[in-house]
Image 1 (cartoon, rainbow, N blue to C red):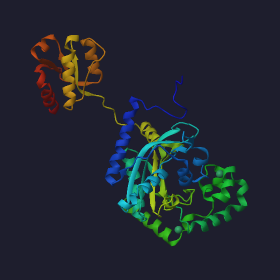
Image 2 (image 1 turned 30 degrees about the vertical axis):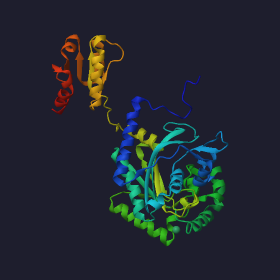
Image 3 (image 1 turned 90 degrees about the horizontal axis):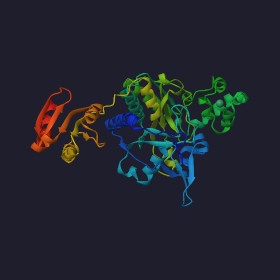
Image 4 (image 1 turned 90 degrees about the vertical axis):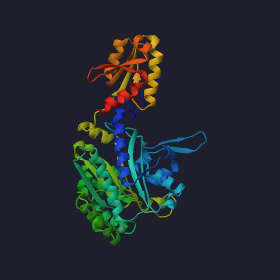
Length: 421
Ligand SMILES: [Zn+2]
Ligand SMILES: [Zn+2]
């Protein structure tokens, strides 16, 4: 018998689920403010989608996917991220035909066969948005500001926004060549990964975490100096929109994305108190992805936020709200004979929208009062033989300690009146 959850997964227990609900509710609220609608795609997709949509040469695809063959001999993969699946749904359901711009968000579990470590899981959760259809820099600004506002709403104020442009298929090849020229003499000093990146994907050398590689690439040309007119104008306009909105940013020429369909804006938001895991949000424009997945060229931008990391930050900073487990009424019959009347009252109270509970463990009245205090309950409705005989209930206000004999059918009204005071 298996007694533990699989490695890299975690149970979210009743004591912790309220924290998740709080984060999710904040996410939904912000998305509503900005007009983003929720999309829920399956947790698994055809493997082919991720090979095309994420890129076969990426670590995610080559090392980290949960891929399996189902009973119909189809190769399926648990989603390692959600942008490709959103694009697939966008095309499959022709969302582009409904409106020129689709503003979508998702929240859900993703799966990567990664080495588990603190705050990192094989089943983890992401919130992300995708805006498909607009090429204008105002779209980029909206997406970035949404992310910042969400994090600030959660109380994370020490944020740093890093910004870069990764160009487009027109200007990037020129930059690639210039970068390779600059590094060619020094490739031997690079780490093994970067040596193999040199031909295939030299821009990724710039964001290698190995300090040796960082040193080698110091002094390498910056892509923002090599942008074509269109990319440059886009980037300048975005910067002015962010500045006008009062959003601080830092230009980071090392912020790159590996694949061809990423274009123009790349951004990352860091929350410094998290130390080595300070990146809480990563995103950017992907004007080439929809076409890569077989659709009409559709300029798009999005981001993803890892929710485990956000939760970690909120815990660390004491920013999680206190959970309220209190109920309105606890119904307490004295003796088995009065349980049916109590149960009927309980059902009526709930039907009328009050949070109510009773004892299901045959506790005596003392034990039941203890239960009521544990919640805590604002009122206890006690039904003993005498009360039952008169069709009444002894209603105790747990705050004031005042008890009052109330008609069974009037309990609801009495409680509501007192709660309004
Ligand atoms: Zn360009
Ligand atoms: Zn390296």
